[in-house]
Each structure stands twice: as structure tokens, then as C-alpha cells.
Image 1: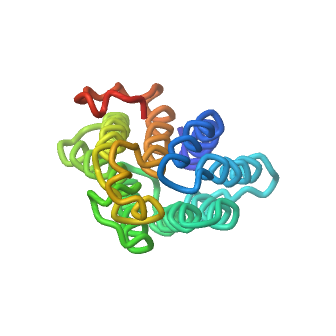
Image 2 (image 1 turned 90 degrees about the vertical axis):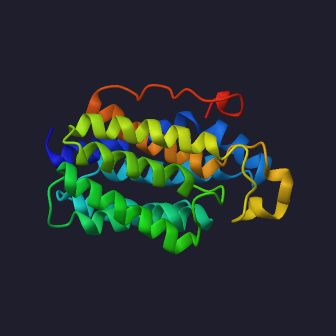
Length: 225
């Protein structure tokens, strides 16, 4: 699959995953946030989908990702819009003059993670999307360092994102609206981490031809994420 076609397929798959998971994301956010993560993400990704089917869609994958980021920043709104928008814009900037090879895609994911950390001022363990995004990037890089294939790398990243999302369940939130709840945020999966899991699983589905295998977890992580 050509690089641009891969990015387009990834974005379409992510938009589809958000549409199908809108109610679940909203339910997760209703427990510890404003209850609008699902509807906001769907609104943003629907604009991305419309961009993908219109005439004049950017041909270069870096520009395509940057435009995706601009749409998400504008139409998702709130903190999620800033974080997802900044992530895609950073990934796009990293790929403006490169192909989506294993190392280059890793560079783009690194740039996306750096944008999330910078914009959200969040660290691992704060119960945010960082807790899913950071282990996904790390797993992707580890497979690449061992000489693995792109398919193996994105599959590992998706599995790590799932495990990272589930790891937020026992955490107490230290950032965002959920942090206002204090200890009452414990026992709930972070909605941003859940949508991040969708992002990486969508990439794995398009590159590797199927979803990443489920990750074995303890009792806390046995809930669906």
C-alpha cells in the first residue's frame, strides 16, 4: 500500500472506530468528565472523513495529517481537540518530506507523543491519553529496534495501547476535569486513553490486516476498554 493510501485508510478506520464507539466514550467521560468525549470526537472525525472523500485532498501524507490535525483542533473542541489536533499536526510535520517507513513512522509517533506531553503537561501515571500513547510508541520502537516488520510494530503498539488504557482504571487522575474528583476517579478507565487505543488499533487493522490481539490483564483490567 502506498504511503498516502495507508494514511487515508488509517484515518478512515479511526473515524469509523470513533463512530462505532461514540456511546462508550461518552459513558466513560460521563463517569469522570464532562460526558462529551464521544460526541466531540465523532464530530471531529466526521469532518476528517468528509475531507478524505472530497476533491483536492492533500496528496502528501504529511500535509494530510496536518490538515487532519487542524480539523480535529477546530471541531473536537476543548482539551481533546487541542491534544488530538496537536498530535496529528506534529506527526504530519515529521512526515512532510519523508515516507512512512518503520523508522520514519516511529519519528512521527514520537513527535505526536511529545506534542501531547507539551500541550497537556501530563506524565505517565496521570490518568490521561499519555498512559496509552507512550507505551504504544515504546512498543513500536522496540519491535523496530529488533528488526521487526511494520506489521509487527503496529500490532505491538496496538496491544500496548490497550494495556496502557486499561492501566488507567486503578489510577487517580492528576490532570484534567477528572482530577477534580480526587480518589473518586479511581476505578474508571480514562476516556482519552480509550480513544487513543482506538487510534492505534485502527492503524494495526490497516497495516497488519486485523486487530491486535487482546492483552491478558488482571481483574481490574478485565473490563472492556
